[in-house]
Image 1: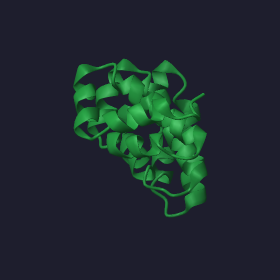
Image 2 (image 1 turned 60 degrees about the vertical axis):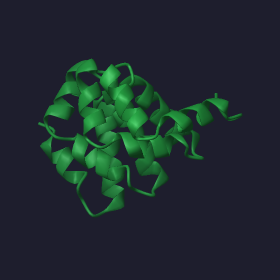
Image 3 (image 1 turned 45 degrees about the vertical axis):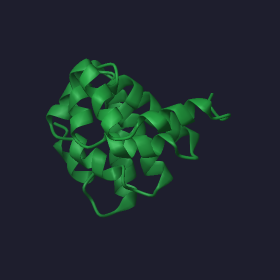
Image 4 (image 1 turned 135 degrees about the horizontal axis):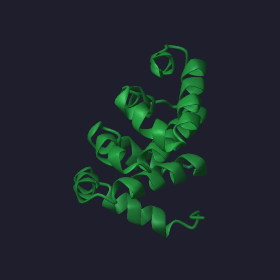
Length: 138
């Protein structure tokens, strides 16, 4: 199972955080794993890692959440687990990988009406507009 990797995401060592997040990102590419990762409890440590100040950790976590958000069954779970506010913040990051993965994840989440309301209530509309107006948008 995925429990050993999920447990590593709780480690106090940032290098271990990065490796655990990278493993979850890689595993989250397949449809079968998307559901399994969420069902086995990986969202909580991933959302906790969104508070990291380490660019490499944030790149891996945002990419993992973006991959997971491609599964329709995960969209609501991601939005309700507290990921939305930090994703809104990271969408405005100066790091383009973090910003683009966060924005893509939010876009995927907003394919559900309930999640559109969550993003709006969390103050995500103005930052989304600001990001779209940015000259750095690819």
